[in-house]
Length: 280
Image (cartoon, rainbow, N blue to C red; front, side, top):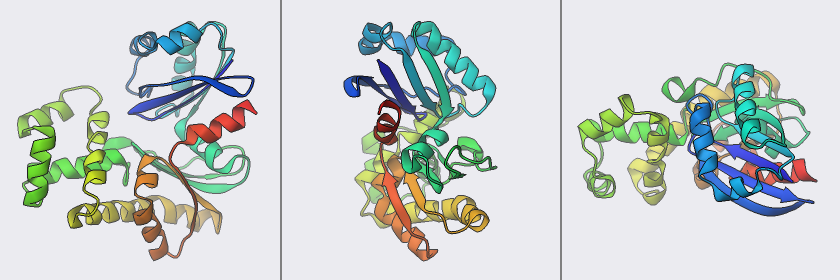
């Protein structure tokens, strides 16, 4: 049995296969080794009956996780997974590697990630080449769901939201200023909290404020990530992976068109392509 896992900071998607067929699947809380320590990871795994029941049958795990960018984090994550899946050989890479494989397989291309976080890289057919884009949810992640959540909360707290959206926000979330600031500055996983507000954008996508916010965020993303990569590596195919890219694809395509760029594919759930690649 083989397990393929793709994890952002908010959600981890698990697919278990036997002889090329999916026999079980589940979602867990996101497993980002930057924020999730080994003890918490084991607690997450033990809460899923599907994983507990199949733990001893899984022989290989291909795990792609946000935050697994350094050798130390990969090693720690692999060690913890091996202690739970005792008979399994564990392969750990970061989510950017997984996104690149899902979008390009073994062909070169430029891969943009727009999900809970954001990233971009040139993929040479074997691995994403190193760059300086991955600054995380505080310094970077322009165009991601936690970026849009941050902008929404900032405007709400500054009383800059249009009144109709402010009324909807209060009705949907019932949060005041002290609660929001406490959750961001004094509680764990502030990035996951910020990400949770992206649903507000999808629910109000026709509103002028939302459209402008999405367009502004995507423009910053292109200026900081895509355009420097295109300038450096030339006219390669551009692919996008992630929930934000997929659910706001029309706005993303318009941003690309403004820069005379063409997006070849947009993939919402990279785990499906990874499943094909690693189990066939």
